[in-house]
Image 1 (cartoon, rainbow, N blue to C red):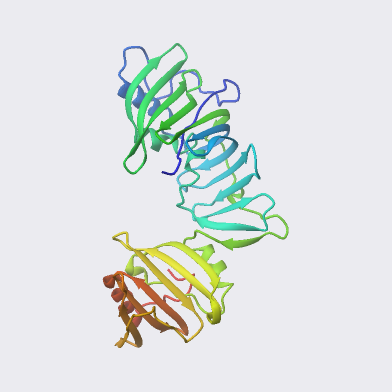
Image 2: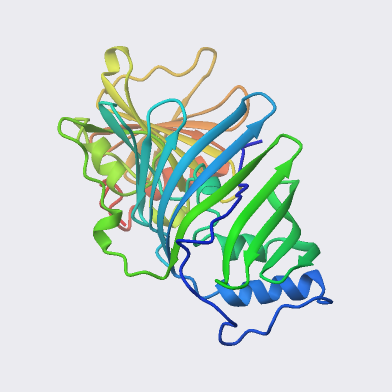
Length: 357
């Protein structure tokens, strides 16, 4: 299971002042149920649309022991943009900059930075006390509460992965109306984050979400999504990258550029169908293609295209065709492959450029 979030701890100074009862809320007092307290906490933070914060995070795992990180975060809704800097106790610091469309990850001292999908969740554990906090509390079930003069301690269960619930605790300061600690534990470990500074709804310049690489550092396409990362891949190959027509509703999960023998550079596009099935599209400039051993293929005419089609030994279908001078090989469920070939053979709009819709 991927470690997700557990956030801890505190600081009375440095928090954005918010003393007293927030407009539209009611006092939190002894005798209130956990659900009532949860609702009141949400009322105090529901209008968060931007957060800047500094924190210390401690991660404990069965196989990885104890790890400590210093974290700074600037996050903004509704675009989902954020800038995250993570400094481990050992190893090189790294920065993640997400502009709401795609993200960049760069580890200090590296020669390349990675262009990543904006929907990737591997940084969620570092962002829970930012603009993710409302969503996380909303998804949690309140099971216990302790109300003190200036602090509420709310105990919950929170889904952190499919089929996995964590025991979570939120410490919330009633003077500042700010969280001071979040803790999350499950059978595989725990994460605790201690805030050292937090400011809610500051004015944030759009330049905060622009990555400026150090001199000599160049991009390297990794986990990717349609957008800038496809443009980067296109710049590395001498043939037009072919995209599935938007009518096929495929989600692009990964783009890789590699070298395969006599084929020269190839582009590997990994998609996911509407039924969550993987679809692999391999593209190159060469006219030569050798099907897997023991697989027979037949020639068909689909619209304006000549296509070779065959059944995969482990199920599904493989199709080979030329689209605008690019060799395209598609592997996936038979219905998906057939629909793609039909769409390419009977085009109603262009599907051959990374900038295409």
